[in-house]
Image 1 (cartoon, chains in turn blue, yellow):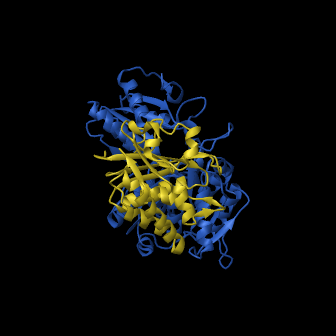
Image 2 (cartoon, rainbow over the protein chains, first blue to last red):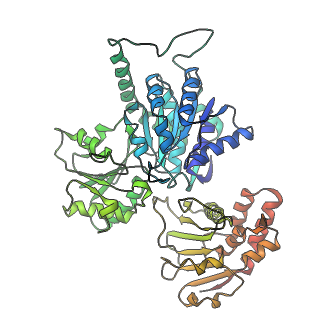
Image 3 (tube, each protein chain N blue to C red):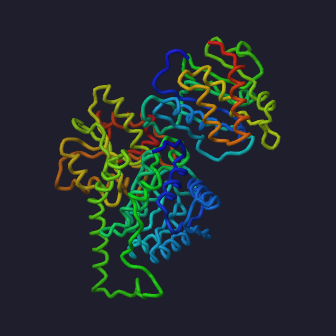
Length: 386
Length: 192
């Protein structure tokens, strides 16, 4: 196994290539652009055997992926922010049609005011589309998660699309070392897709035709069951990967120094990694703080959250905001605990629009909780310095 | 530097087109070859324009790096364009006892801050021109400036920098860049 040092986006493109998709259809958008540039380079050099479709928009990108996936192809795309929002209708379609498309979303904040920097409002807004969402905190996790995502999406008990998310610039444009297995080893881990059904002129079937009200609930229930199945399969696939390749990033959540913690920080992606540095600092100060970095948003790791709350209060840091209410993770965490736990939950909004969040900021957030200065949701970006 | 802390943070200042981002990437590639387990390189997060001041960053550590925030207090500052120091305070945030590497034909003593910080100078532009490292007529100084870094940072060797350069640019171009790095290494003056 070789170690390469490269940016999150180039690592994503490499993972996509090694997964051998039959079709990639994508449209460039900052900060995702260097993924599709790299894949185009692979195509130009003859290193990519699948079809690469240049499309005129993200709506078309997802539409092309849907068509290809329905014809039995392994399918990959990537986008960010406004591109993801333009896909929204087709995201629902892909999930309801039970098509195992894998997509990278490089998290970027939404404009106007025009922004290219990171936050998670773009993917959080796709919560109800039926897609599985996985969030990464390092380039190694990006690589591993993309290949694992194909295995998860295509599993007969799942058959749902998977979105692999990571922070724009903070990971997409940062070089880190990544262990890369040989193509043969990836092929063994991820055999060719075996579709449950295909669109085939020789053997015609209809799909997506009108469905009467008495039957429609069953297709929604089947998707819900598939998400529940994914909850069990994500740890199994992560375990198999670890046994084969040695790297592991947690199951639905990654725990760090939680054993004796009085407070546990809950967050996603790069904020989760930075939180580890904060926790080491706080522990030196005698404060018992741990981290649960969530790797999935859908399926939501509700059982894990409940178990964390048995002995600790929870501090949620959202890098997104559901305008008119609060941080989306804050909402989900509290709903898991309703009538089942007495743990207190504190909500913070931090890092919107790429605002840098340092471990010292996370330390200040925890201190506010410990000193009981926190009430309701705090906009740390705007108040944290005071 | 003498006793190096586990985590070294480096800030590169240059102009768009000079190769600051590539320099940061090559440096961490070399650092990994030298057995540093954790490395990171990243540009300033934003739009880049040719000729405008740009920044790039590198982290080198014995352990996996969990930091994902920007660098505010570098151990080492690398200046690819001396002229930039007229408009940008490149010393901002530099750690006490830190080090500054400057692409300049001057000597370390010529810089008034050399009594406060370790200063290393090398005429990377001259070396780039001498070795025909030009893109669109503009000297690309990233390879020669990297040659100066092993002089002030023990945990990265010239050999690994050469290897990283040869991996990045194959054939003659790689050899020219590697030679420039080696010449810069030999010509770097350091005042501690």
